[in-house]
Structures are given as C-alpha cells and as structure tokens.
Image 1 (spheres, helix red, strand yellow):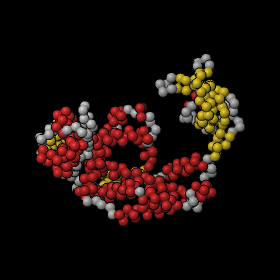
Image 2: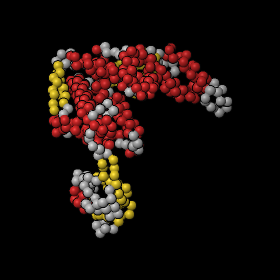
Image 3: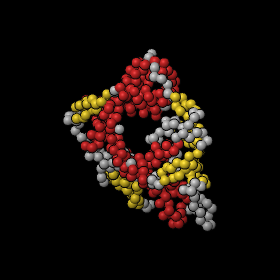
Image 4: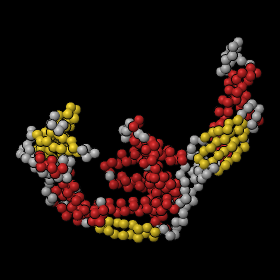
Length: 426
C-alpha cells in the first residue's frame, strides 16, 4: 500500500491511497465466493452460479461492493502508517477499482491544528481586582436570611402596601365583558410600587378586602393596555424575625450571638469575592492566549459543539422541532470559537509545561471534599468511584496546576476596591 498525505490547510488533510492488486487478490477471491452465494440467475440454484457467469453478469456490482468494504480498512491503515490522527469523519471520493488493477481512493479529513503558543514565560501582565466586604454586604446578607425565615400570616383587614395578594385575574374588554379562556387563577402578587402591578394599580387596590373586585390595567409586551377584573382571594403579610442573638443561633449553628453571625457572614462574603476574583483572573489569563495565538478552529469541532448545545436544549425539555440549529449556531458562535481555541491551547500548554496530577493527589482531594461534608461521605466516595467523575476531578486539578504555573510567569497587580463600587456597577 502506498499513501500520499497532502496538507490542505491548518486543519485539513488529504490522503491518496493506492493498494496494488497483488495485495488484494486473495481478499477479492474470498469476497467473490461469498458474493456468489447471494446472487440469483435463472437456471441456477442460489449460490450455484459459476464464477465466470458471476463475473460476467455481476462483475461491476461485485467490484463496487468490494471497494466499499475495503475503503475503511485501508483508510485506517493509511492513518496508522502516516501517524496522523483524524478528528472528523473522512470524505471519501475518487474510488477506483477493477479486478486485476490497483485500488485507489482519496480521503479528506480534519486534524487538530498545530498550536503555536505565543510567548508567555516573560512579559505577561494582569490586573486582579479584589472587592472588600463592607457592613452593607453583611446587612444585606442578614436581610436575605430574614426574608427566607419569614412567616406568612393571613390578614383579615383591608389591603396595604408590602402585603401579598392571592388573586384571580379575568381579562375583559373595554366595556367590562369577560373574554372566554382568558382567566388566570391563584396568582400571588407582591403589593409594592415596583411590583408587577405598578403604583397606579396599587392605589386602586388599596383598602380592598377578601372577595372584593377591582379593575386593573396591565400592559403587554408591545406596551398595549390589557384590562382585568381582579378578584381578591387571600391577603397575607410576611412576618420577619427579629435580628438578635436567638436569631443568630437559629440560622448559624456556629454562631453564639449576633456579633459572631455577622463575623461569619463577613468571612463567607469575603471568600466569595476572592473566589470570583480568582475566576476573573484565570479567565483573563486564558483570554490572553486566545487573543494572541494564531489558531483556526476545525469545522468539525465547531459543528460538534453546536450539536452538543442543541442536545442540551433537548434535555432541558425544548421540543426538538422548535430548536433552530442555525439560530443556536449564530447566537453562540463567538463563545464556541473562544472555548474551542482555549481547549486546544490548554492542551498544548499542559503538554509543554509537563503538567501531571498523580493518583495520590486525586485521592487527597477526594478526602478534602469528604472532610468538608462528612455527612455525605458515602455518596461522595461512590460518586468518585465512577471513572468519568474521577477523570473530571483530575482535569480540574490539572487546570488549577496549569494556572498556578502561568501565574508564576506573570506580573499580577492586585487592586483592592470597595464592594460599594461593585454594587453601583450592578
């Protein structure tokens, strides 16, 4: 067998394969015997047609079927001989075969492109912004906990602001006639000026009691008015717990009093800010490589990624017939290209930097995860007994080690900012 490999572009290769008749002769004889058993010819029993007649009557069909059966075998052999690893299904063309002649075909396929890393061991500079937790952060966290711990209490009197309303809404025309099939039942509504009803409707509802009906006007997506008859079914209010030492002990077993709760919350919020700061820095480092590397993304990798996104939508419950693959492709194009470029660059960086993670390191990390939640120890162990989950954890550890190495090459300016600036920005 002879092969000729041609580089079409950075990720496309073309293989021209030639197999001499002498190499195929025995295989074709065996194939022809099997083929003869399938053919039917008037005057002969099935499988008893003489080989000469088989060649005369079915020679072209036999040659075509044999060539088709041989393509994959010799394509794989050619890949092994050339040492090339395909990442896509090959396009086969120009297949030529006649009994007694050389077998030829051409296979075009994609490979992972050669990744030439930009210079990175000197000259990389990054700014890492870290936000510092303040009293307002702690106060907001406590208020969130109060809302979660609130009790609902039925209100017997007239409606007031900041209460919660259970209501039916019947759409009506401008004259007040109900529209059939346009009723929404058992809707919970927060009676707040910035709530779904808005300040004008809130004024119309003020003073209403259970069983009362009020006319309200909402707007559709186009800004057009929609008239409703709102029937009050129930009114409740949220009773928030007092913020004291008892509250602190109830919501945080590790807190003995309110001061300790505030200190614990401050630490957790600061850890969250630092975690987010670390995530932004690692993204900035990855983005540095994506922006500075000359790298084309193979078409097959891109299309496979789109297929994955479509499959994810199906798993989330979207009807298959309603998913527009081209729209998904276009909407996510930039992020797909970024992610695939980083995938290829990360792979090359790990190889260049010789980043490895030993089994013992993976085991240590599993023990750390168990120590953080010993009540789930058995579930955690079972989870990481599955090879795919253990591989995923190893890849996470490899990524962490890679970013630590890359950070050691860079100059990183840490900038501390008040979390007040973050709240203003959001």
